[in-house]
Amino acid sequence: MKTLRQALRSTRKAVVASVAALGLGVGGLLTLTTAPAAHADTQICTQYGSTTIQGRYVVQNNRWGTSEAQCINVTSTGFQVTQADGSVATNGAPKSYPSIYNGCHYTNCSPGTNLPAQLSSISSAPTSISYTYVNNAVFDAAYDIWLDPAAKKDGVNKTEIMVWYNHVGSIQPVGSKVGTASVAGRNWDVWTGNNGGNDVISFVSSSAIDSWSFDVKAFANETINRGLAQNSWYLTSVQAGFEPWQNGAGLAVSSFSSTVNIGGGSTTGGSTTGGSTTGGTTTGGTTTGGTTTGGSTTGGTTTGGTTTGGSTTGGSTTGGTTTGGSTNGGSTGGTGSSGCKVTVTPQSWSGGFTADVKVANTGSSAISSWKLGFTLPSGQTITSAWNATVSPSSGAVTATNLSYNGTIPAGGSQSFGFQGTTSGAYAAPTGFTLNGAACS
Image (cartoon, rainbow, N blue to C red; front, side, top):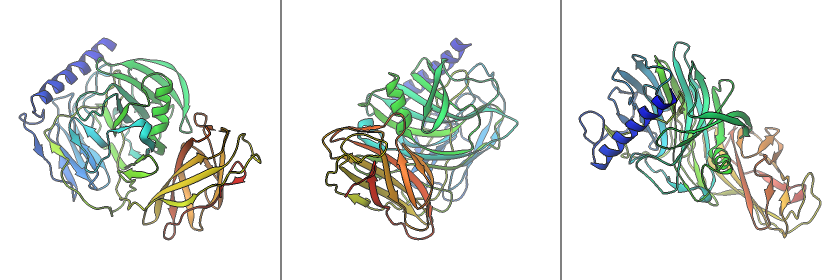
């Protein structure tokens, strides 16, 4: 059964690669066209049809594994599968991979994306997805992260990371289960294998997740630690959607956001939350009839996710930047010299914001088990965080390292971030302390 799945996936990818090499699309009659951006709800029923939303994401139908009809209704914040005829064997490849993405996929790059980007240059990559599920289908809903040694915009990447939010029916990831892991504050079953075209590592939740925010870097770091990628490799795209085997009408991505922060804080892909967008609109970057492929999974899983509207207007970096003189000792729950500099890079929109926080160690020795204290302005409430646990959700809060980023070497830094709501205009946090010692 595993051989069948791999053969199906490998054959599909080989065909796509051959057609792409000829400069042709696989949809329709082997033509490559540019699709208009979706403004009102847009219905897509063509096999590889796609469009853009919010001037920054691509939504694709991607019905690659069946000749039966499939249609998606693309909204300003995501999409819903409105027709999903037929079924395929659950021990083989799925019917399709309707999805939304930030980055580049078979030369179809989302507008304004800064991907591919080298992992070593990415300080954080916060993302958020909300799904709507149905009871009468066999499917998986997961998040696909593609990595490659080269800054590739076309073809199959070397390693695929899948984060399974949910799966229903007798389907399973590529390969075999190799253990468990705690990543981004959740526990996962870990599977690894190869589908005949690329390595796949899957993180499978034991229960359905309807909505969740996390940092893509957390899963990239775990993948590096397991020897399936390197820090010099490139993140080429992040994709969220569904892989249905049977039925699937009604499945939806109700909200999605993807932001990639480079170095000290440049951001792209702005985080979005369902609602109207305020970002500048861009066109182009979308194709219909272009070749696309689903998240690779054998045995049944791939990745999915949903997207949602509401664009961010990226503020300049800072609030809370402190230039820290060195202070020694006095650590609470940690060790090492605690001279520090904190840089906050915010993005804000009406009623909400994200903040990427870089904590630099300006002292002469490493800091272990770090805790960063700070005060949120009145009216702000944290709703999710990545690369750290943050509590409480308002007022004087403390961010505590996770298992994989507990040491800040002398002259080095660690980054984390959080998303929140605000009752007024965004304002930066203040009063930063590292392990009890002031950073300024």
